[in-house]
Image (tube, rainbow, N blue to C red; front, side, top):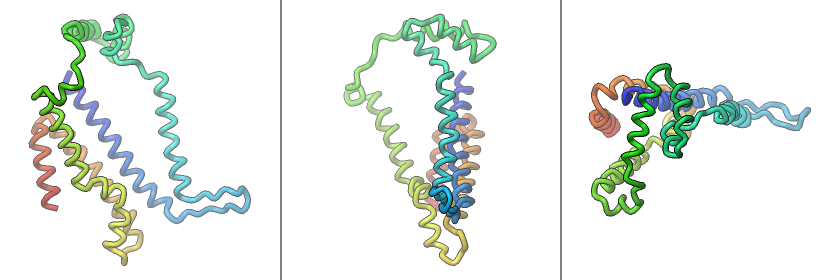
Amino acid sequence: PADKRGMMISFNQINITGGIMVSFWVNLWLKGITGDSSVTGWQWTGWRIAMLLQCVPAGLLLLGSFWLPRSPRWLVQQNRVAEALETLRLLRDHGAEEELRQICSDNDARVGVAPWSDFIFDPASRRRLVCGVTLQTGQMCSGIDSIMFFGPAIFAQAAPHVHDADLTAQGIAGVINFASTFVAVLYLDRAGRRPLLACGAALQALC
């Protein structure tokens, strides 16, 4: 169902913003750690610890990918219908056969693979492409990457008299970013994407 797919996408975004928030506060926690290299020859500086910590979830993700089932829709496209049914049964207790029939029906209705030139010459496809590119470009140009990457330097210059203002303010920005994700999750299906986009853009312009 569309509502469940929307929730899965929302949970993915929550995990992303949550990870960014945690990383900001971990940076503050590890700031100033230099370690002693006199014995092992290895200096346990804060940035090395941060990099090693990132390897833990990355390693778990790598290991988990070996057990990740293939997409049922892709399996149907490869004429591996039995495997698609097994995968659907892993994902849900009931309705796997009905969903498989729907996927097979959609696959049979496909006329063929549309050429890449449709993005230029087909008006509907061109409109979707321009819309997607404009939204992503506008998001980047709004300054979010500047805050995420260069926030500590910006905050340190803005408040040089405050101790640890750089990483503390960055951590607060991460909390706001994380909390704002829940607003989008709660009101995405109620208000719709366009009103939320307009409200977010208006708040950014106001700030």
